[in-house]
Length: 343
Image (cartoon, rainbow, N blue to C red; front, side, top):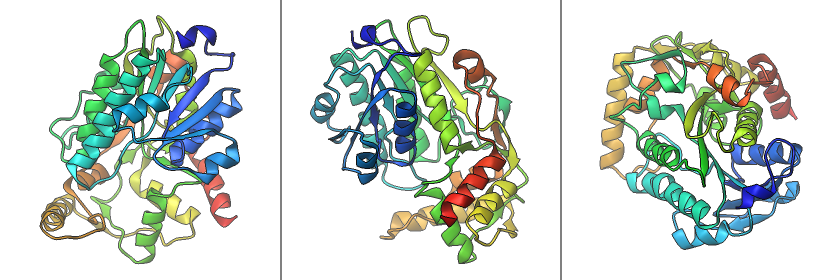
């Protein structure tokens, strides 16, 4: 078995990162390199940023079983499965293909090539319930949130369950649920938020006083590396899921305005009631289903619930089982983001 040659926690581990060219993927590659591990990426396209890091790249669609089996061949000791389709809108088949079939193929490839460790990037969205806020709980205390109003949450829940069920003496698995990752290099959430703020199209839902956790990008990468280096036979984290965040719940209003101020964008002051936001989300979903509209809808029912519900978590289980203690505070992260954007 590949893992017999390189134990975690000191020796060089040969790690395959799926989706290594994305926002979190790049951070994972950098963090693994900083800890002395050997890193290879597999994704559907080639990325110049990975070339700059000196990370070998393999191309392939994880929804293709044969391509995945080929990409995972090479004597790897571990896989960080980060690749996924995220978003609040889109075709169910696209989410299912990327998140469910892709993860099934990753598990099959790990078994076929005797890769003994798998760290899976999940999401707190798999536990979302509009009527049950999460306030200071660990993952073992919070059930899955069916039924979902989001294809992303639905398919990520299926994928996470498959990963945890696959934990065995031959394949040790763990699932991490980082909450709202942000920081330098973000090409998704922050650019959209800034664009909407500058056009006056951002609104808080229900006042924005609900406490939420978020995760600075370096902390998210750190958590994955910490989990990897503790994942072995008999590990406390094997077969379990963990919430990951900065461990600093802030009112959503302060989170959004902190990000906007770092980008020198107008802060959000206006708010709409939750009931109105939910109705608007339902109308948007109907319109985007009936009409050939390309952009994502400005609001959905799931997003209205997310924006108005408290979501903050206990980091005690992650600290206890694999030593995760976030190193970058919210304040320091916002300062780093501001300097990065101005540079």
